[in-house]
Image 1 (cartoon, rainbow over the protein chains, first blue to last red):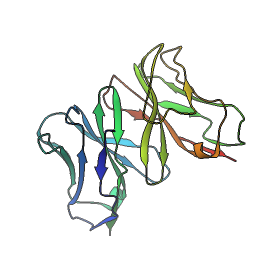
Image 2: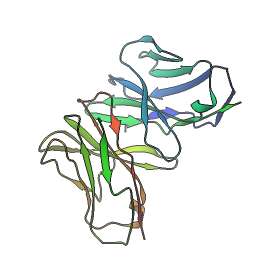
Image 3: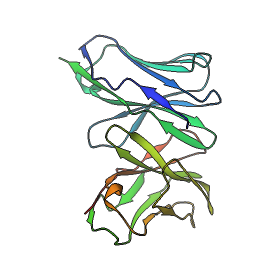
Image 4: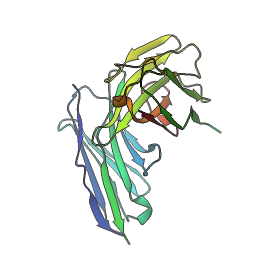
Length: 109
Length: 111
């Protein structure tokens, strides 16, 4: 069974701080890695994807991938109250997607 | 507008009464998928389809059927629903195993 693990939280950070979200995966053959944000009662929406080792930045978001350690993370700089949501890590294995259970983030004004 | 639509959005039914949840996308995506989301268990893939007439089981296919007769549609069929299929269901589509776009969700309750 391929696994994706995330700390369920809740993670609380003050407004303006950096939020760090982590994810580990079991399948060393995983090729693609995604971070989705899900507000309560809504569908997941893509924040970032990353395919290669290293960092990828998009605005306030940075995804980091380390395939040797089977670890992917998401940093949110200058956190805003609107960033309060559940963040889902997803990886591909073969033709399937595997999701973690999500980390709940609360940004405190 | 590029989107994935699902119907119905909410459904309350009784054990054993066959139901179908429809899913349609207008982005010409080859890959379509169904997930269920349960508290503490996250999103789990039920079935996926790489293209028309090609479907495969995900991690939790028991009790579900799918078909892919047209590229844009991927209905989920519960032939004999049971209470343990009460869940929030999402349909998603993508170009191969790339960024997935999710529908709005269908909240199903089986009594």
